[in-house]
Each structure stands twice: as C-alpha cells, then as structure tokens.
Image (cartoon, rainbow, N blue to C red; front, side, top):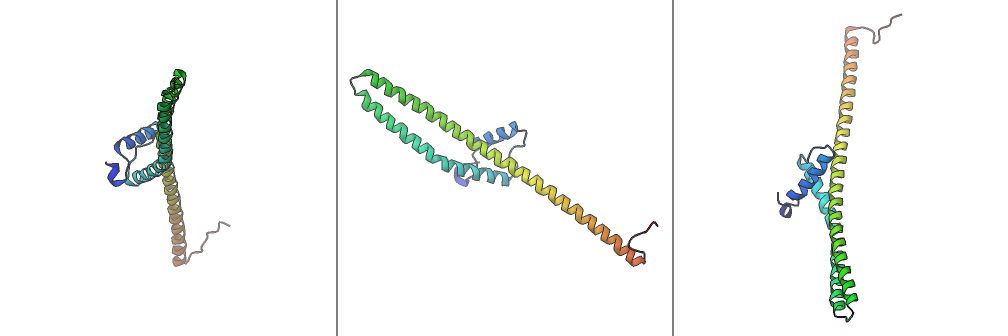
Length: 158
C-alpha cells in the first residue's frame, strides 16, 4: 500500500497503528472505512505537525550557524558550550519527532476505537428499534385478528 499516491497509510504507519490496537485488545484495521478514517486523521495531524518540524529544523540550523561562528572564537569554552547546545538541540529534536509520531499514532487509535464504539451503539439502537417495531406489529396483528373474529380487544378475567 503506497501512501504517497493514494493518501492511505503506509505499511509502516499501519503496522504501528495495528500494534497499538492489539495492545488495547482490539482488532487491527479491518475495513476500508476505518483505513480511510485513520489515513485522514494521520494526514491532518501530520500536516499540522509539519509546522513544528520545520521550526525545529530552522532552530537547529540557526544553532549550527552559531556553532560555526562561535568556533572561530578564541575561547575554547565558548566553542565547546555551543557544540554542546547543538548536540542537545539535536537530541531534543529527535525526541520531539518521536513524540509527534507517537501522538499521531495514539490519536489514530483513539479515533478508530471511538468509531467502533459508535458503530456498536448504533447497531444496538437499530436492533432495539427493530425489536420494538416487531413487538408493535405483533400486537397490532393480534388486535386486528381479534377484531376479525369478533372477540373483544382485551380479555377480562372478572
């Protein structure tokens, strides 16, 4: 499944979501509706988080330029301090990207689970409505049959 051409989750993204669903003792993504829903959630969050990633990249680039300029300083401590800041920024950037990926996966799983719960509720409501309608039809049939036979609509025990 190629996510670049058709907008669906890539295989790696889908595997992450399926693993998360299994941790919650849920079935993996099983139909096209859930896949389309998961893909839409992933794309919307990814496009929002692209702004965070780009600002993170620009900040790291600015810090790298500061390291180059600071390394020209005569004081070695300033150069080491700036290199340390650059390494820390790279580490924090990596952690941020991993956290964004985990948050997007968690949101996809939440949306799928909520969607499944809503489907179960709507099926239960539909079943209840069907059984109520069947009971109503049965009582109307019984009343119409009594009327055809000329019997009273309610039997009295007194």
